[in-house]
Image 1 (cartoon, rainbow, N blue to C red):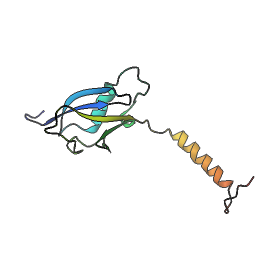
Image 2 (spheres, rainbow, N blue to C red):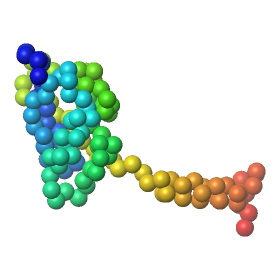
Image 3 (cartoon, helix red, strand yellow):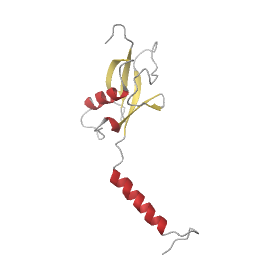
Image 4 (spheres, one colour):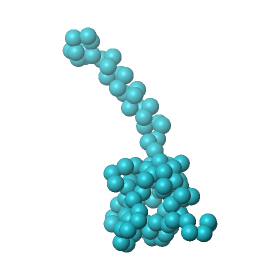
Amino acid sequence: MAEGEERIELKFRIYDGTDIAHDTYPVSTTTVGTLKQKLIAEWPQGKTVIPKSVNDVKLIHAGKVLENTKTLADSRITFGDIPGAITMHVVVQPPIAKKKTEKKKKKKKENMQKTNSCSCTIL
C-alpha cells in the first residue's frame, strides 16, 4: 500500500440487519469484486441465505448497485469528513437457473399457441 493512500471505513449490512466486514479499505485500489470476495469469506454461519459466488452478491451504496470491476474511487463512494463508517447494503441474489427460464419460455409459447388473433382462447 502506498504511503498516505486514502482509506475509507466501510461496513456491510446484510438482509437481517447484521453488519459484517467492518474495516478500512484503500479507496484507489480496492475493487467492488474484492469487497464481495471478502464478504463471502466472512459471511456469518447459520444464515438462511448464503452467497456462493461474487455474482450472487449485489452491493448497494446511495441507491446504486456497484459494478465488480470498479474501484471504490471509480464508484464515487462518499468519503472525507464523515464520522464513523459508511454502511453499504448487501443483497444476495443467486442467478436464475437456466432451466427455470427455459421452462417459463416454453410454457408462455404454449399459451400463445392456444390463443388466436382475436385473443379468443381455443379449447
